[in-house]
Amino acid sequence: MLESAVKSAALDTVVDEVFSVDEIGRYKTVPDVYEMVTTAWRLYPQSVSFQSSNRWDVAGAHKFGFRTVWINRTGQPDEYRDHPPALILPSLDGL
Image 1 (tube, rainbow, N blue to C red):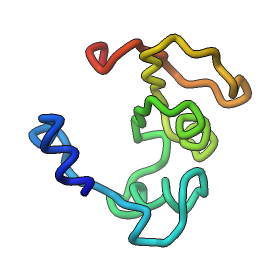
Image 2: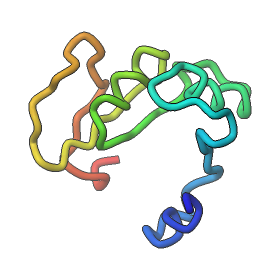
Image 3: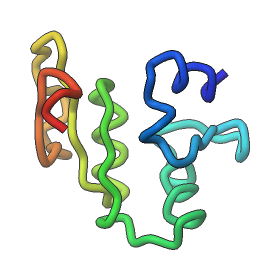
């Protein structure tokens, strides 16, 4: 399902790998989910740029140590000020 979604969004040429919580049976914002990326790619968390339109997901990724970008398409208020994103954008265009 995820790979199909990436392809239909025309992101398949820029996405190197798709990670799914199904692999570990845990869900965001549990740190194990974000650790899937750092383990698979042998990276430190601060080396990862994480983008999401879900503010709770950005907060979890920030808490894990990722550099985060919140894609705030609808101008929602920030509910997680204790875990601020590095950048807030109105769309993916600014990436």
